Length: 263
Image 1 (spheres, helix red, strand yellow):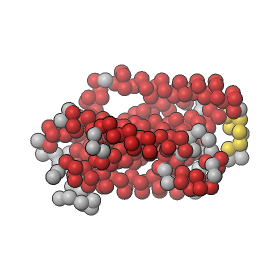
Image 2 (cartoon, helix red, strand yellow):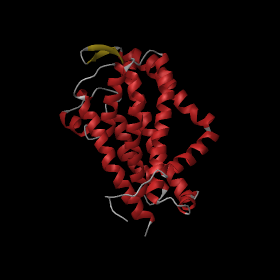
Image 3 (cartoon, helix red, strand yellow):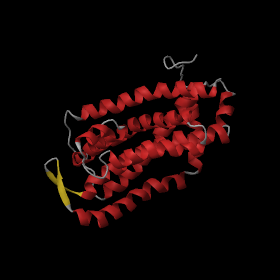
């Protein structure tokens, strides 16, 4: 059955997740290093270098240091990167070069279950990276608790949304080199203009409107609220946008992958 509506998915998609987890366990020592070291490098650069230059500035009516402002954005960017690259480059390699999808399709699993398992695994990698980064950043006193505990379920939600985006890109690109296009046109602008390095109100009005269309903008806003410990009704807008983004892109990525692989 093809089409956006009505994907047939059973709990067997967990087998795909288990397969990827088994591979991950063999390389966990290497896989753990980036999420552990990356925040320390960023905090060192921004905390010791740029933060001394910028100093404190007003955010939500309070004086905050630049490193405290940017630390939540590092978590949000890590969620995006881990999920997107797992279902773009990594899934593409498994699909075309390692022929993993072909091997799994020889079992009772369907293509929908394979894609769902890939997306679930990508969200899990975001969750693992967030937990590791959160542990490191917490040592610097840059995360408020108990609100910070909500970062883990938020990482799972954000991971699912960006994993679906990555899988949609995988369904569209003709070869692995073409991933540079969505990265240049979508991922890099989100990294720079989603309120990661400066407050959105520093942008012109038209740019603020465009930024609201970017899913990372909403993830950054939510992560910043969790880490700084402020909760307000406006956060429901950010949560709803991120949830809707994932709900739309997940069936769309399934439909596009069916069109690509089942002809």
